[in-house]
Length: 165
Image (cartoon, rainbow, N blue to C red; front, side, top):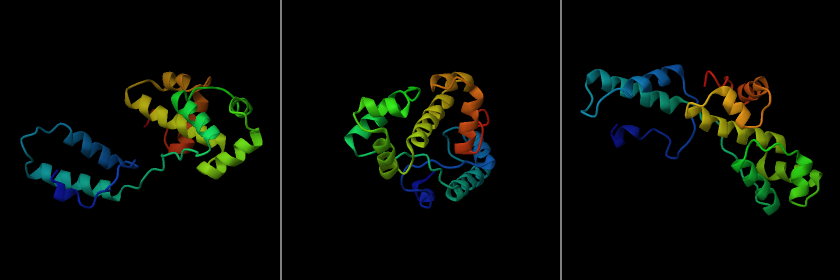
């Protein structure tokens, strides 16, 4: 697409909720060659741009805490989202009271510790699923013993099952 045709698109990278129409249109466009667009392709390209422009943004980003102790926990979870340590164990690891860790996590990220960890896992799941990894393998990689629990959490946060995603 010409840069001028993209003027109405988001100026910063973002995650969009993709409609079925947009998904299928992009799938079709991905088969086109690099020789330029014919009239039907140009029309479909305009539909793609319209759909992107109208697509709501998905709130998938995560605020990292500023407190050095909480940041250490957050970074460890980002590196190993399947780490099964409980909140009390994380608090002991960074020498902070569990209640303080809980209060500060909410204050600095807007999420409880558990909610934040679930979102880290969903972001990692999106990455793994995009590479073709199975739902079961993804769930196990992320520390879930029960695939159903992983599917329920994924659906609660994204509104769709990992298989449909």
